[in-house]
Image 1 (spheres, rainbow, N blue to C red):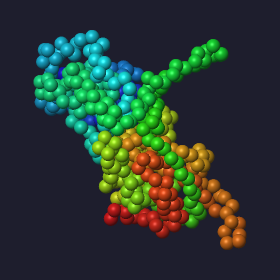
Image 2: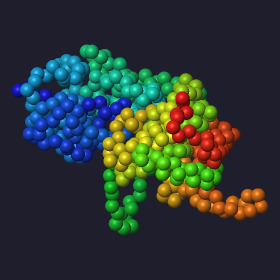
Image 3: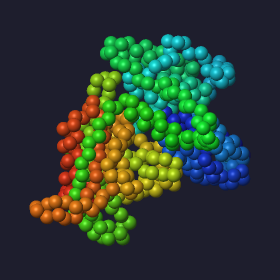
Length: 451
């Protein structure tokens, strides 16, 4: 009998830990390859970790609500085969490196000139711990232990970008500190030359008053998703000078056609929603207005135009807002988008989204109409430069050709990065979307826009 340790795999770019929310097997259970063994939740999403091999569960090494890190043992498996199917792992650390990892939980003192006391503008966004690789493709897994990963995370850098000086490129704490020192020195000098102002950091947040002095209070810890939302929205709001413009679309004809099509497509399991239709229209709009499908690279003083259209879909869940992504939306038909939107929303509510489902967003669509909201100001999700908000469509009296008639009016709001997009561009973009929604024949049901 061979005993194999099943460890926490890489959870995605910049993600080194997660919380165990469900243990799906018990000692003595027989498991097969790719069978889910635990369910975890991190800042990006909830996901299941599958077993890399078949066998019988011998011992479970984790508990519910425990925070586990990449490389940590989840359980042990007993199997009849040998361990030749083990996934390649970085070479184990040398005795010297092992001794270094065993040092106190307090990481090495960071020299004053290495630890950033302030965040220069923007605070090294390329090195932010949760930055996605181009096209949502993760970097190679860095050979680094939990203590080194924790130090990198606390200093706000991506350990996968650090070149290790140890055996087989293994990364040490000194490597992390040297990396931060080089970044801070370079960015500080660049900021001084360009006269950039410093960005506020979380350390600048003032202490709350003692609310308990005035009456009873109750505290509740932030969930992983809420912590992520706090960090990401704060970052987006600080780094992006937002402007919101609003318009409205007369979707009376669109609603009539949508209802008819839903009756025809019911047997195919397709349900066309206003959100799906809006995503289809936005996919076309982003090709006609490419600046809305870009990102601002301040480090290189460039605008990055994406040749693909990945649109995020805001989904409200009992754990908070999540933003799965419909990839290559410009190539999909309206019915394909409707299917994918429904599938992603269901996965989001059932905690089945993968890290890949959350990556690569260029633009996002948020529909609050179901909650009765009309116009609002959505926050742009960095590194995107714009977001579209949909409100509640209502029957509204409209004066037209000397008569007052009832029309179904949909509120539209677009927020954008004013460093990249001018007001005139935003007006043309939003008006094009409104006109596309008002003219249903612009929408192609069975053929993608890219064909």
